[in-house]
Image (cartoon, rainbow, N blue to C red):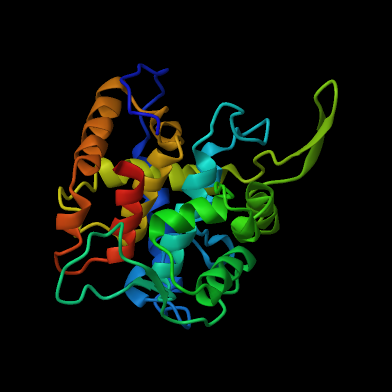
Length: 294
């Protein structure tokens, strides 16, 4: 897992009051449109920041942060995003009320030794999520969070478990974003081969996502993970695990960048076992965090 490093990035102009007001207005309208939760989802964890047409899953948000805007692909050197996207799937399913960790019993088990249990097999409407959910539901005995991240990524030496691998995940997520009007599809020639790429076509949605991440650790910082929106908390952890979080902080001024990274480090230094025991928490979320920060 790539560690956080100090970095000086190019400076950009501060946002004007007008642009800030416009963004606040967009967010307010989005919240009014989504007061009613989706069927089968946990109302408290609904993402109400975007309009219905541009509602993004955790996987799509992480991929969007990692995609190069013009080139339309993630960095060839990023070997963390594959497992990070699988972690996104587990948390997304947990926030939608489909998965949970097994009960502790009399002797408390650690987060990484507890099995993942299917709480509901109701379809989510997302093909990738439903595919992962079916694997988890049909597997007996159940597996741990760490095992599912490895199995869904295809990182197993057991040939009998290779069928659990979810294939072409990045391409399938990119196509979802194309359907939502965020990306477009192009063919690029790389000397010896052609590659399908997905350049950014709707910069407004990506900038809204970046602003939301920045605000979570700057203007709207609450210094308590249990007062943060669960989706945003998960996004920060998983974007870091996928080595794409710094892309959201690159436009910041130097002092803002340093403050944002300091607060991210505070989150990374939390003890998942202890945090999972507190009220208003999602144990599977913290189990995924533990899998990436152990």
